[in-house]
Image (cartoon, rainbow, N blue to C red; front, side):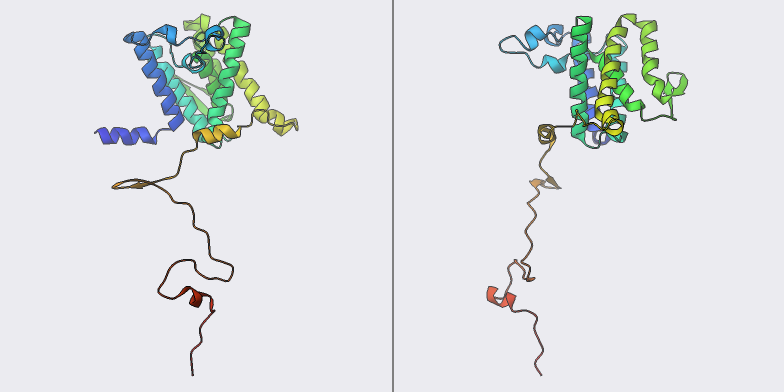
Length: 261
């Protein structure tokens, strides 16, 4: 049973499953069991940047706390649903590092807007969920999506989330609008401006992000794991083999043989 669960877990999109699981564990630990203090999670530039030493984890931790009660379940669900669509089926993001850089740039834009426009950016997961939803659904025009008991055009899903917040948590609307603006800005700089404006892609994934998530190639064996060796160089242009054999090396470059008689 445990092996089946692990197999099902491995089949999920890796970045989406990891992010959603981190949100769920953090939210359970903070809201339900109280083992994770809220003071460790919120974002404040005065402690994240200017304090010595800077508490740089707050750039990430503020996106890991969901809302209370039912949001503990729904927020990780929405994150996995939309981020897996971005990771697996969005033509803009061909590589895993592109998705990671997307999260970094959009998350940073959300923090900047929330802090400078709203005056506070303590917990920004609702804005990031809306941004991911917008990015995932804008390339699904003509498709339908389910929103609870209703079927709506896929590209309207971000606005359905805004409408739900208007009914249930209107105080989240300004923060979610920051997420919508961040996603719009990313789409403009990453896709629209290079394709239709003739400009450069200002949000191209830098090389250090690719190196950050690139892992060595491994060989999976029944008796352990080994590193895949480097590709061997081919023989010289004369066609001589570089491998060992029963004949002396001087015989291997004599060319093709001929029958006698």
